[in-house]
Image 1 (spheres, one colour):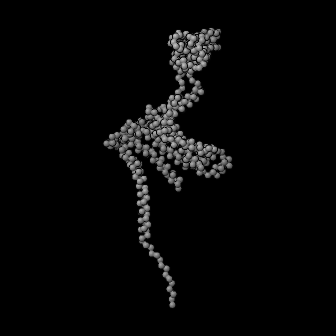
Image 2 (image 1 turned 120 degrees about the vertical axis):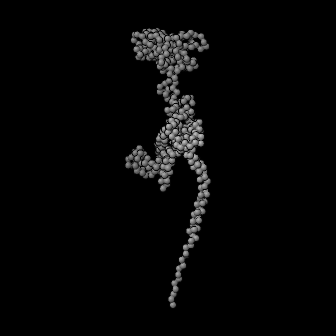
Image 3 (image 1 turned 180 degrees about the horizontal axis):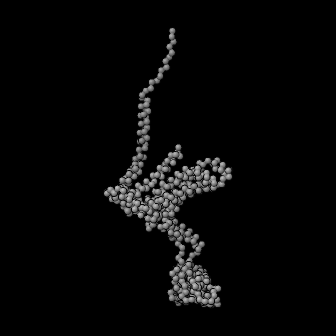
Length: 450
């Protein structure tokens, strides 16, 4: 009798399994598309459509009715204002990101050695919370040319006057017909020569009695002395009226601090400064005749500071405001990268005798290169689009000297030019300049993720 072994039954694959999986995948894609659809609609309405419309609009004239082909792009190349905007944009791209990245790196390294690092980072990052509009207004006031309003010019005037001093009587002038001649350089000289032993009275006007120094005393006539020229410089004005021109009256006060020089053959041989009563003495004079001179420094207008928003400095001044806003951003990003560096490598270098500068230059910076690149490229993209600060800080007369591509695009399109064709061409140019930096940033981000 032959025994029969049980035969194992195999499951026959069904064709329904793969079809079910395909349907599940299609459902998953449909659900994902349903969730992404609102974002895609917004992206198309706010980004894709405006870009395509601007590209098409750039081929038409100002009215938008006549096709001009590349005429707007040709006009960009020949328009001086557009060329200046391109030049200023290039200055921004070269200077601002490099300075910000360097400042952020230095501050990030230094903050690590500060006890109150968190508070310090907060202080530097706080300007990021200020809108560009508010920051522009702040710096417009800070850069004001009037030292009584602009804090930077107030500091500049204080430093200048502390080092070089200031003129005593910027509004003073000589009394007409009293023997003083006005020179081209602003100085006054005596019409007649004087000799040692003579006395001179030099009457001045144009100074308000309230503007005299506190220590000014009543003027008095100088006495004669052998070998000296003596005199008095005084305000030839009697409060309340009265008095005689060219004569010292009892109520008239001297002008203290006035510089007086004795000139012979075009060379200054002696000098003196008037006292509280306006008197002076020129000593050490040899025999002969001299001309007395009141140098132009006595009457120079007061130093008013620096024209921060003039044609020469307006772009650097606006870049300075931009640095104030974005330094904290660069510092925080670079500081985050710095915190991930392997400390054992840094400590090993220090143990081997490397100085802090060598550790920074040969280890810290190379290891931070990917982070520094991302920060730099991000800032390049940002400065290419800068608009608010330039438009707000630059005064109207120098707006053209400070203009960049973004402001020029607005001015041409809506700020009086009313040429949307040329404005669209500028927008397309700006887009073409930004795209390479964006592609580089995205590719580096993907590589870092892998």
